[in-house]
Image (cartoon, rainbow, N blue to C red; front, side, top):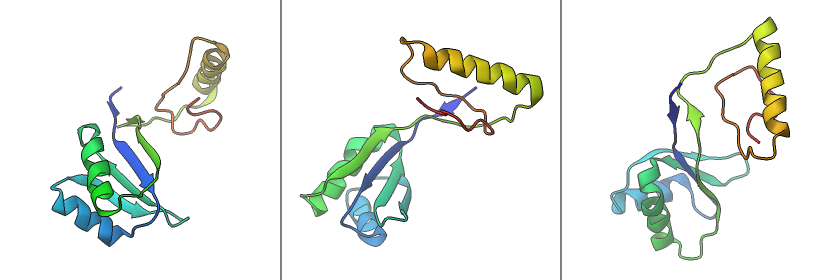
Amino acid sequence: MVYHCPISVIFNGMDEEAVLEALIMAEVDAKDITTLEDGRIKVIGEPTDLNKIKTAIEDVKPDVQFDVDDITTTPQETIELEDEDMMLFERLMTLLNDCDDVDQIFHNVSNYDEGEEE
């Protein structure tokens, strides 16, 4: 299973066009820029570009407060489990969630709803 680890930067106070212009001026390559339902801007890029993205935005808007600025782990391929396989997977997830030594759980099961990443 291969995971892709893009970064997400979420903040208020700018529109998509202003963010795109700031990133172009700083010669930063972002993968996606979107406006969330609540009006905040979400920029997705490569992990190596996290500081470049933040700096480009701070250069245009020095008082910006980043709500999120972290690396996310997402699978490149997902699977769906059924019947006995899903029961076994749910049992595994329950055991992992109960273990104090486990901080985060990443998986690629698309039809598992409860506790996707804890």
